[in-house]
Image 1 (cartoon, protein in one colour):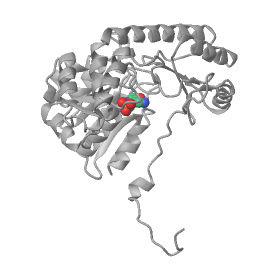
Image 2 (cartoon, protein in one colour):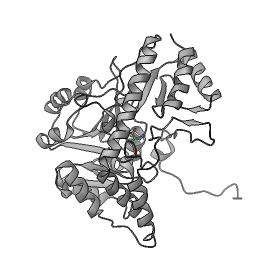
Image 3 (cartoon, protein in one colour):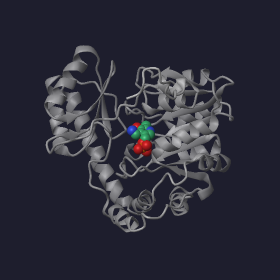
Image 4 (spheres, helix red, strand yellow):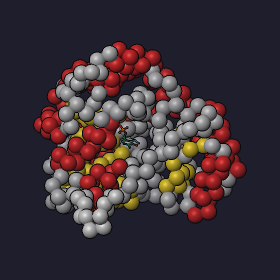
Length: 359
Ligand code: PMP
């Protein structure tokens, strides 16, 4: 439709070179088990659904851009002030605000790899430099190497606990030692998207760390345990000056009124959420025990997913078998397969496939 010599607007080089974020495939049929995106398999919490229905009557109006009610409710939930809370369209949205708010072109962001696939994209998009530190042999963060990688261009370090996709948490003690080794001018983001699924004591008491190390920023989401992935709402807790800066970098009205009200209602329904999380944890333990008894050597996952380290022909045959059974999982080139823990019927389908491939 355009003449051959028409010069079209050019995207920035950083955009043209971005790694792509490949979302987990979505389920299209009754028998498809959607285990690729670590969503909650439960229906929305009734209180959240009711809040959405109520908020829907206001959708001709813009939402509260400052998200005052949600930030105050979160502050009460966490024992901080609303001034220390910033919300955004998913924790990935808040993370984009963090990186673009702190990094000039050429500044460095350190993170472990493999970890959440949005990290390299957000860093590149900001024109910053990604510094990947390979996971250690236990599939966890190599914090010594991460601390050693800090330079005077380092602005942000991302710690993902439990780590997506390996499920391995970072202990409170190890994070504390790390924080002592890192200059206080570097923002250490603790991405706790799956924190509700971790057994008590397995991960950091990040709020206690935040109180002692004001360069800590805690990142959490309503997408996983709270079951609001489709509404897009996440938050950060950070020192008031940082949180205020994040609020200034936000797109106006980025979090809808539906999302804000559903998030408030979800916090009020904490006990129901916890009962669901307990059931997922129980299933996770059942699956892990079952697989270990059949020769699989898994690292204990603290997320709502299992990580199957597999490369080459094993990975290929697992992917084929899941595909043929209508089970959507997340396959990572060269590394392995991540499978969301869901209801026991879906989990049993997963177990049957893995049994057939046991080492
Ligand atoms: N952090 C991690 C580690 C994740 O796995 C995810 C979602 N896959 C997110 C952040 C982002 O979640 P959301 O934007 O839905 O809050």
